[in-house]
Image 1 (cartoon, helix red, strand yellow):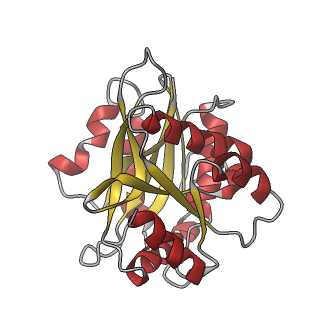
Image 2 (cartoon, rainbow, N blue to C red):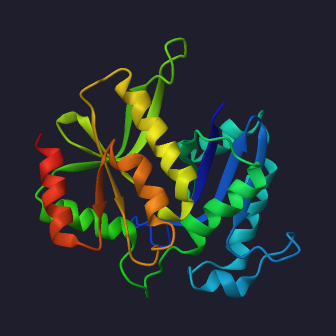
Length: 254
C-alpha cells in the first residue's frame, strides 16, 4: 500500500489567500509521523523565534499543533482532513501526494519531506517560490491552467482504479498533467513519479505528462532523478525560462 503524505497549510493574510507549508504528516499503513516548523528539539515545545519569519505567533500555532497531533490515528484522521470544509480556518491539513516506492519508515519519510517541502520553502522576503515561478511560466505561455488535477489510474490489471493527484492541468484538456518534482528525492522520487504516470497510462494510453524542476543547486543528484522519468515525461527546468515556456506550450496544445 502506498504511503500518503499531507501538508499543513497556513494562510497569513486571508484576503490574499496565499498559503504556506508549515508542516508535513505521513501515513503509512496506519502509522503516522509528522514535522512542524518551530518544534523544539525536545519535541514537546514550540520555538517562537522560528515561527516569526512565517508571521505566526506561538500562542496561535500551539493549539493547532496539539489538535493535529491529537487526530493522528486511523479513526480520527478523516475528521482532521474535513475540518476546513466545516469551519473557516487559517491552518489546515490536505492530501499532497502518495509515495509508491517502499519507504524506510513514516518518521524518516516525514523528515525528508519536511526538508524538501517546508524547511526550504520561501517567505515573502525571499526569491519567488517554485509555485510562483511555475505559474509565471504558464501565464507567459498563455496557457489556461488549473491546479490540483486528479486523473484515474490503475497500478495493475487486478488492482482497483484510484484518483492520482497532479499539481497542474490544462483547462479543456484532460490528457495533459504537470507535476512539480523535487530532485532532492533522487531515484526514489523519480520512481514514484514514474509509477504514477504509468498507472494513468494503464487507463489512458494517450495521456501526456511533464514535470517542473530546478537544476540550480542540485547538480549532485540531478541525473539520478532525471534519467528514470525523462523517457516518460517532458522535463521542464524553470531556470531556463524561455525553453520552459516553449515546452509548456508544446505539451499543452498537443
